[in-house]
Image (cartoon, rainbow, N blue to C red; front, side):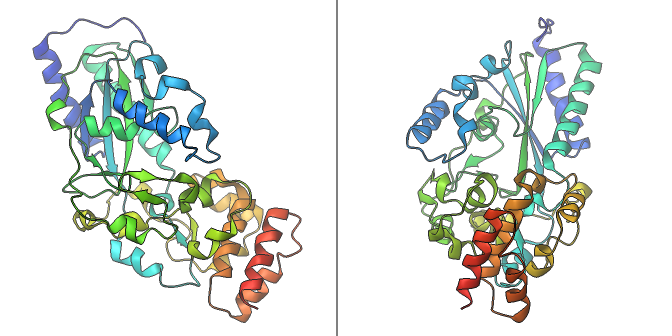
Length: 358
């Protein structure tokens, strides 16, 4: 980062207010500013890693202390601007009902539209350029779930919300259906320290009770190895058989801990066009999706977060869901079409799924 310019406290306070206005104009629902002291969160992360609860997400260990020390990741950083953008594309009840239709695919609501990394990164870059136009060159880096950043801990410090028992950030008037992005900066902006939130989950255990695989092993404790989001997105090999029935019709991620969180009664569908569902993935038939060729899959997942899992894992996940579906001739035919697949991962899961119908 370049050397910081000198600004008066009044100028920085004025700039902080302007950042709120610019952020709202860019589609963010909330902006917060925090310092970079993440010692407690860093210790909690290390305990989680030491317990092996990250599974095969080896990237979580690669960067040492940079996750909890923003100034090591980006030298010169003294503040982090955290931004929230809501993404729920439909009334929450529609998503809940979809879980009861075993022949249809459930895709985590965040992945139905355009890849959020691209959306938020572009908006944050525009925000940085507006700041630059106001005060001149300053040091910054934009991050959206793309680097060793403790975004939830930073969001909590910035007053975006508290970390719920399911380990997601919750806002008391907007629930938890939102993305987070960060702008690391060398500007000594006033921080929202007084806004740092403690948990308001109380005695509620809804997220623990509804988790299909009991991945939330206790309040604020998540075993990533059991989480359906991990199993269907991060895991590249065979899904352990002990979890396959519990996956149900969830072919990409899982939202149960949010769908049944009482705080999400305050969530409202987004007006952000980029997050509108594409290719009917909000209510698609499993058999239809299983029939996509790799070329079709590449075309229909262009610009989508789903692209990152690859075609083989896509079919693997759908095979498991078809194994959990109601037995019909169409389901059997679809699975039989893949039991000799050259993709061993797909063939294995298709054979398992067929066994569930016999």
